[in-house]
Length: 370
Image (tube, rainbow, N blue to C red; front, side, top):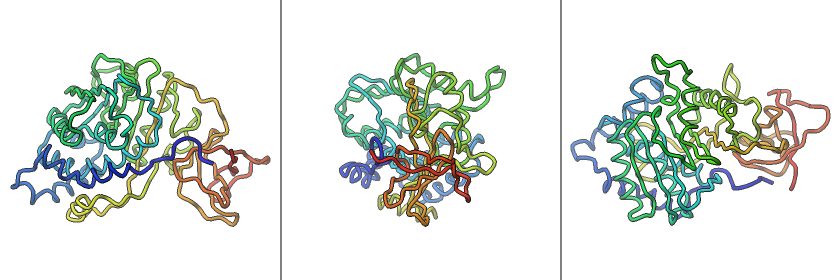
């Protein structure tokens, strides 16, 4: 019943084994001095608190340039982001051909490059040019060292650029991406006439090649989705249209405002042993990952019967059901004895009468079997 690739597939078995030994990659590419090892769990805990309670403040924009916070990120948050991004990359039709250029805005320690290497063995033999931009030069250098320790000799060409988002390099990229950088992209600059969202759209559109794709990835939080929703509207007005997760271009029915649900995806993931051990020492037990994202291009969606599943399974008197995003708004799809995992794209039809779920007010729809 689902259309296209399975959503958020697990990493390939060989890549998962590599990730389970990623602590060895860190030891080769970004070794931690022995005198700092004892304080690592505390720095991980402190960084976690800062990124959740102070997100949007100055701390969250410059921590990659500070040794203790960078080490905490590399040892704990980076592996978790490799899992999140890797599972997303595995389910997207990226259409990266030989010689493609990818621009990564806010690359940090080359998280996206490493996640792509792990998730897409089919791309490892292609000559891809990566331009990785970030304010923190130390973070970029650390990432380059980590990628060499992870991948060894590769046809991928990695170029790092220390610069702010507002000044991307003069290049036309087949794929422009920005992960966990929404705060920076939408930060208001003094003396500028354009709004933060308008400035972000300019920074994202300017380097995009004709026919290129744009990928934005954020944590699966209400605040992040509110920001993505504002960007979505502005990007559609600029001529870029979502192909995933949105199955339409009308107003988002799950913007996270005024108590409304927000569009995000959560999947259970047992972490590698070294990561679980560090998380336990830092008091951060974690066995699931969440994200929100937008994947856009110039092609205008034409079908109106598509639905993106956005919830876990719900038991009803008639069987299983899941909430989904459609162009008619939030919809409860009555799956019965079938199922479609969260993130799946399916076809639906709406019975006459426009009946709604009495609890949520969502429209009721039924799946279409292909």
